[in-house]
Length: 583
Image 1 (tube, rainbow, N blue to C red):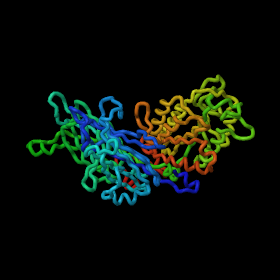
Image 2: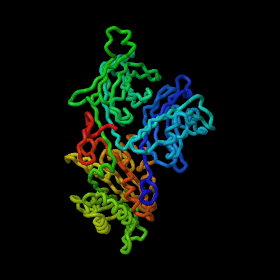
Image 3: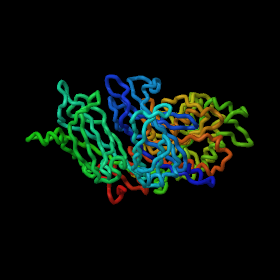
């Protein structure tokens, strides 16, 4: 991690990478139809394989091209092991319970520092054995558009026939942006006899070598010749390799449950054309079927596809905003649940010891003294949760530890320490450990600042807790909602309790999702067990904070105002070339 620099070691470089997968000549496990494949991406941590994410299921197709994009963090000079497993999905059957569901797999592992030599010879370099080795650069701004094709293997290193898997990898640069596209269509051709077409849209990027890369596949709209597809977000690198004039091939199909989709029509577009939208005007393309155009004399089109809206989001890093003068506001939230132990007992994590600070104070001071160096006014909001508080001694999961709800801020970290020490004798430690109310409160505060003109403030919530979260589902939901706001969360685990829940919230072993399955827009949570760092120089901690390097979400600061330096971004329409050229 970046902390290495603070401890005299090398600074590890992290790179965001997008992976797309496709398969060819898969084994056919079905009797009446073809296999219904799905690819599962596994990651190895401490010798254990766990599922990171999975693609959609494509019905009745032995040569699937998956629309799902896997987004990963790759670390320079670290060996990271991935495994791609392909399964034939049968309804609600659990994956892996039957051998005949498994269509093949391949492992990927390679030290990151081998990237540069690998990238030059990737197309001709033959790797040993059955292991597919994948690596990506962490050099900023570089875009590694590379493809690797490897055979799939069954158990005991047996080839899965002629099955292969293709992995396309693209690095997402630090200054990359995202675009949100809203497509609909009018008067599409009807391909069905007894009902109307079930249309879906595919967008392919045409690469420099003439190959086509699937960028996005919409959902199917049943029985509708005038579909309105759900809006979707895609990175500019994925869409057009940050080249506004790169051709995009767009296909409209009538979906068939057996996988034999009927072609409705196609059109070509560029991102530059898409940006012509604005001022209430829409961008339209004729959806053309080349065969009909040749055969039918009066053929006009097979319908019209419309781009009804476009929202362009430039993504900056945490450090970009620091360097640009962004104000950082820190909030401290302290766990006052009974699981910490009676403060009068020397075994308690909240033990009031006149001679030395307790575990919470040690963590608070160590992290807080670093945090205040990034806080512009050196004032901390200090909150507590899980205690009965005066005057009525009702349980509160969101209270100011200075007991002033109108002004919960304290002067510097010493003010937080004093407020904490004054608070402890006045409250009763209770429970449960509900952290979602405080996360929702700070997220709401962050969102509310969009009423401030040219707002340039980023929030960091520091949660000090002893362990198990009671409202896990609500907390996951709150974090997903908060990931759309200019907010990051550092959770410091105090004591020796089970921190499994915190590691889940951290999302390092996979994308954190809400109970309904919605993923976080970006990774905003970093968990740190304080026991692991008590004997390490606190110079480690500023790098821990900067390690978060959160990319600010498109729906908040970036869309409403703040770019580094206090300028104003456009969230819709054409990207100003002078201020923000696509690189």
